[in-house]
Image (cartoon, rainbow, N blue to C red; front, top):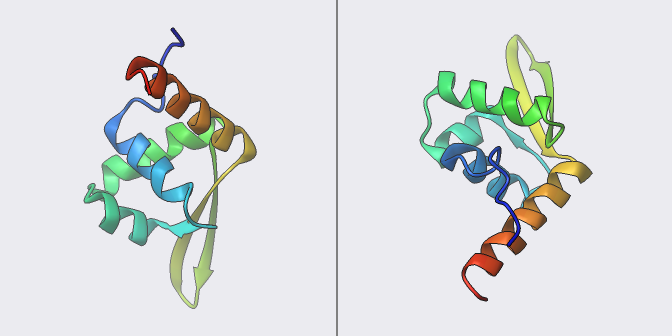
Length: 93
């Protein structure tokens, strides 16, 4: 059996990746609302996904407000698809 990617096996990181797989991009506020995570925890998990190359994180400004936008990378898409395939194998689907 394939091993489940420990980086994606975390509940919050898996939720973030699941959201990003279905949109072109998502900003920090949207991800925070959808995952119901605290800002601090979400920030840490986004850093982990970014460090692994699974997402890109762009920080910018809209007027005077900062805006953080996340996108899944090709590497992240592949890792997520492999994770889902491994899960299907475990579940005999």
